[in-house]
Amino acid sequence: MNKKIEKIVKTLNESQVDMTFITNPTTLNYLTSVEIDPHERIAGLMVFPNHEPIFFVPALEVEVAKAHFEYQVIGYIDSENPWKKIAKNVTFSPVKKIAVEFSDISLQKVDGLKSGFGKVDFFDLTPLISRLRLIKSSDEIEKMKIAGDYADKCFEIGFKYAAENPGVTETDIVAKIEYEMKRMGVTQMSFETLVLSGARAANPHGAPENIAIEQNKFLLFDLGVMKNGYASDATRTVSIGKAPEFDQEIHKIVLEAQLAAMDYIKPGVTVNSIDKVARNIIEKAGYGEYFNHRLGHGIGMDVHEYPSIGGSDELIVESGMCFSNEPGIYIPNKVGVRIEDCIYVTENGAESFTHFDKNLLFF
Image (cartoon, rainbow, N blue to C red; front, side):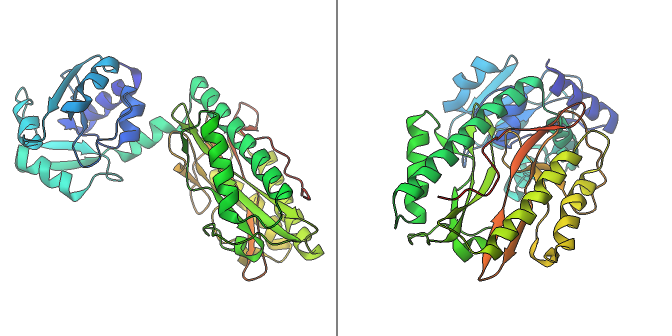
């Protein structure tokens, strides 16, 4: 039994929980090395305090699961009631309390478990799973370095294409980046690629449109890839032509904040204090109201994971944690700047997964 599942077994025994039913595809992959997405069908990992785990999957996923999972795999066909079949295969122990990820489980699945096992209570497994995934192994970090290298390649492709094709649209640049990634063997971006021109970048969650990028304005790129099961995420803001001096000053402030936070990160500090380091610089420059989001988020097999870097969280930073460092200033109808790298915490500080130049570049 792998160490991750052993820790779940320990929690079940300590909390007097009879079994788990874990359904999040990313968590399933993390715990079993089986990469499946059952869509509307049911797939669940059942871990027990005193019995070997059982992996319940749709029939069409059985062979994939058996190739990676060393314990019992049970499949069901579409004409079967999955909940009745699950209960039928768990008769070796009464089930009164089931551990699920509250952050993921749907009411439909809760009702399904109740229909199979009768009156049951539920225990939240989310804190344990989040804690397990919080500290990355050296192998996970190596995979994330590769994903970061591809994000750097995305910047190189996107900047070059924007510079060499006057009048190109935001969506043209997105298409070029993603096409070239496909050619390099990257089948999936980690989220919808953002390319936002001029004042449109002042919307932190804006969406690219089929409109020409503006000359003598900033162009913001926010992007990442999924590679070997792990995500990258990075942002750069560059100038197409010569942006106004005011915009350049905003970029300078954001870069100072981002670098200060990077220098501050190390084991022993709290995640909210990292946010404060960057935020204090932006506030002292007079733009605090325009930095309207947390400094960062965890990253790993999902592009957004625990923890949140900001707010009131007093979580202590440890070696092996991975998260984003992405301050920004967004002045509506005028200018938007964000600079982001995702980092991994070392014994003495932090290192970035992405390395493309963060200084203001002109194209």
